[in-house]
Amino acid sequence: MEIDEALERAKPLGRTQGLISTTAGVLAFELSWIILSVVFIAENPPHHCTVCENCTLEDSIPVQEGNPLMFEQCLEYVNSEWKNETQLCSNGWHYYTELYGDSIVSDWDLVCDKDSLPGLSQSIMLAGFAVGSILAGTAADKYGRRPVTIASILLFNIVGIAVSFSPNYATFVTLRFLLGVIFRGVQLPPLVTLIEFLIPKHRAIFGNIPSVIFSLALVIMSGIAYWIRNWRIFHVVLMVPSIVTMTFIWLQPESVRWLSSHGKHEAAEKWMQKVAKFNGVKDFPKPALKFSEKEEKNEVTQENESDDWVKDNEKVAGKKKTYILFELFRPPTFLVTCVLSWLWVTYTLLYFGFALTTGNLAGDFYLNFFLSSLVELPARIIPLFIIKRIGSLIPLITLLIASGICMIALVITDNLAVRSMQLDNYDWLVTTLSLVGKFLAVCCFPAINLLQTELFPTKVRTAGVGFSQLVGNLGSISSPMLIYLDKFVPNISFITMIASAFLSAFLCLFLPETRGTIQPDTREDLRNLLQTKRLLSCTCKKVSSEESHTSHGENPGTVSGIVDGQENMAFERETPSLNSENISKVNENEGQENIALDEVE
Image (cartoon, rainbow, N blue to C red; front, side, top):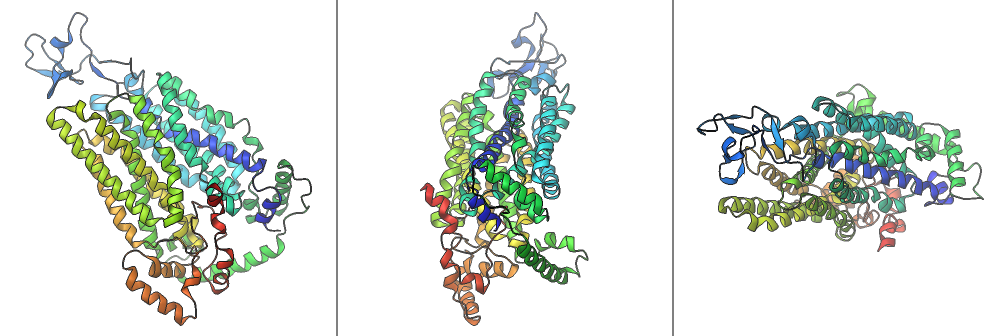
C-alpha cells in the first residue's frame, strides 16, 4: 500500500504523531527564546559616567540638551568648577541595574562609541540562522532526519551552555553565531518529519501548531525575564527546552518517506511496523509497504523529466544539478521568486522591527513585551479562517496597507510628542499603535506561507520555498541595525518598514489568487494561473484564457475547487497536475484539503 494509506491504517493521529508534534512544539519554545532573548540579554540600562567619590552628578555631568531632567550618558565635565568644556567618560560608567539587572551591555561597557555592538550581535546570530538553513536542509536530505536532529541537539546544548560563560563580547557573538547555525539542524528536521508523518487532511492544522507555540513561548519568556535579572542565569534557563528534548529525542522515528525516496525499502518497512506498534495497532499488515510498481514509475518519470530539463537548460548550465535553481529565474517562475522573496523580507523586517523596539516604548518594559507577545496568538490563528473564506491575496494586501498606515500614524504621533515636549500624554497612543502594528504584521505570515506553497511549480517548490526564505533573512538581519540608525536619523527604521510594506502590497497585484485552484506542476501551469487569476489586469487576461481553454477542448470552470484553504505545506510533494486526467478528478475530490479546518470550525 502507499505510505499515506499505511499511515491511515496505523492511526493517522497516534502516539507517533503526538511524539513528533511534542518535539516540534518544545523546539518552537527554544526557537522563540533564542531569537528574541536578546531583548533582555542586551538591554541598555540607564547609565552615566562614573564620578569621583566626593563629587556630585550636578557638578560632574552635564544634562541632556532638550531634556534637563536627564544626565548625559557619555559626557562629563573636564573641570567641574568651570563647566565650560566636556569630554568622553574617562573612568568608566555607572549603571542602574535595579530595573533591568545585569546585561551584556553593563558587563562589557557596550555603550557610547560601542552602542552598535548589541544590535550587531543579533544580526550576526540571525546570519547564523541563514547559514544553518542551507546546511541543515542539505544534511537532513542526505543523511536522514533523525541522525541530523540528534547530533544537532547535542551540539546545540553544549554551545548554548557555553554562551552563558562568555568572558567577552567576541566570544559571545561567535558562540551565538554557532548557536544559530546549529539550531537549524535542531528545528528543521523535526518539522519536516512532522509533515511527512501526517496524511494530507491533518497537515493544515498540525503543521501550524509550532508557529502558535512560538508566540506562546514569548509570553512565557517575559515572565522568566521578569524574575531572573541576570543575563547569564537567564540564558541557562532558556536552554531547558532543548535539554528536556534530549530525554526523548531518541524515540523519534526516521521518516518513512525519506527512507523510501532513498531506496531504503527494508528500513522503511521496519520503521513503518514500529510506528504501527507504537500507535497500538494490532492487526497491521506485514509487509505493509509495496515499492516495486511505484519505484518503476518514479524511475521512468525521473528519466523523462531529467531529459526535458537538460534540453531546456543545456545552453545555460551544462550540468543536471543546476536546473532546479536555474528554473527559479525563468519566466514565469521568476516573477513568483522575486515577489515572494520580497514578501519574506518585508515580513521579517516588520516582525523584528516591532519585536526589537519593545524596550523603546514607555511604561513597564516587561509588561510591554508581554503584551507585544500576547497579540501574536490571535494573529497566528484568525487569518487561517479568513483565508479559507476569501483567499490569500486580498487579505494580505489589506494587512500590508493597514500596517503601513499604522506605522505612519506611529511616526506622526512620535514627532508630535517630541515637538510638544509632552511625551507622557502620547505614551498610551504610541504603545497602542505599536501593538496594533505588531498584530497586523504577524497576520501576514499565514498568507505569505500559503502563497509560497501554492505558487511555486511542484518540480521546484522546495527549492523555491528555501530560496525565498533565505532571501527573507535580509529583513531580520538588517532590522537591528536599522533600529540603531534611529539614533542618527529619527524613525528611519519605521520609514523603511512603511516603504517595504507598501511596495509589497503593490507587488502582490502581479500574483494570482490561488483560492479554488490547483497547485501548478510546471511553468506552463503557472503561466495559465497568472493569465486567469492575477489581480492586475485580470479582466483582459480572462478573455485570452477562456479562448485558450476552448481551443484545447477544456472547460476552465472544472479546474477550481481542490485546494481551497490549503495551508503552509512547504514539504508536501503529492500535488495534483493540471493535465486532462487530473482535471476530470477535481470535482470528485473537491474540498478534501480543507477537512482539517472544517473540523475545527
